[in-house]
Image 1 (cartoon, rainbow, N blue to C red):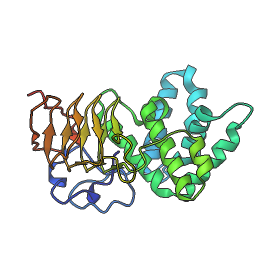
Image 2 (image 1 turned 180 degrees about the vertical axis):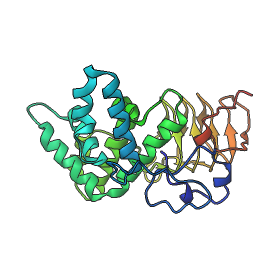
Image 3 (image 1 turned 90 degrees about the vertical axis):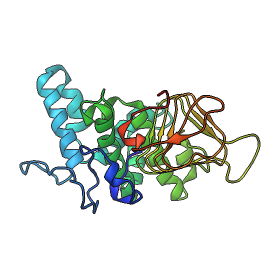
Image 4 (image 1 turned 30 degrees about the vertical axis):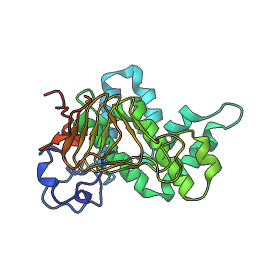
Length: 273
């Protein structure tokens, strides 16, 4: 998950890549540039949404076949939250049991009641574009990245759960481990497990700090703490705490080694060095 950089520990902003900026409109960071303002003409004052719409318009102009597709999913929508609710509803509705328009209204209401979910979605879009070399435009992440959409479905479900609307929250079928905690600026690659161990109840899941990178296929099990700026190597099985700024290698007997940068932002995996 991406997050506003001024919420990270004070030791970390100086390590962020120069190209990284905060996409959240209420960020108070003063030592790094915020997202550039959109062009005045037709601007909503929402940088991420304006940029995403501009990208959609460029694609539609370049590919006439896609004009209706982009118009229906992005260009005709009044806000990122409503566009997101509509897209998720189209993918998660149950024909004959849960109509798409009713699910859209449920999701839109949850996102409207919890503006922090919309701010986090904007930061996720900016992080995908900045960290993933395969993501040339935020609109591609918005429309096609299943991980992004699953995360936003979880955010909407969490909003409903927080409002004590547990039945519709469970209906969305997007879950994180009950007591797991994931910090700011964390990058989690595919096939990662944050799980418990055995039949232990209570606080039994991992606590992941800020700026962490968890490599593909890694498993972090039990109530262990992954320190700020740490890296979990691909395929690693972690059963004990990992200190701040170190690398946990997926090799039995290897100790965690120091990190000098925030791997959750740089996306550099160095455990094999």
